[in-house]
Picture (cartoon, rainbow, N blue to C red):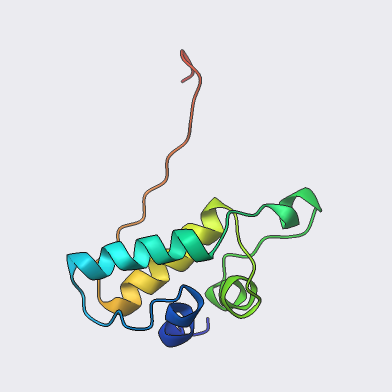
Length: 101
């Protein structure tokens, strides 16, 4: 797996000045990611494979300046937070209709 290129990611989300692990930095990273990297499910709709490999995600969303769907977005953002020194815990959730088990 490729290492995370934090500086290139920060440039992509236009937050080059974020350097410390603070609450304000977390807010800036979150806002930057949301405003710069759109939700996109084109690959899913076109029947292309989806990779959650960090190198592939950086190629697509950082270097390629594309968006990604939920798992891609969250994996990239998690890598950014971890690279900044934040403790990250992965969680998964699903929407279930009433009465589903």
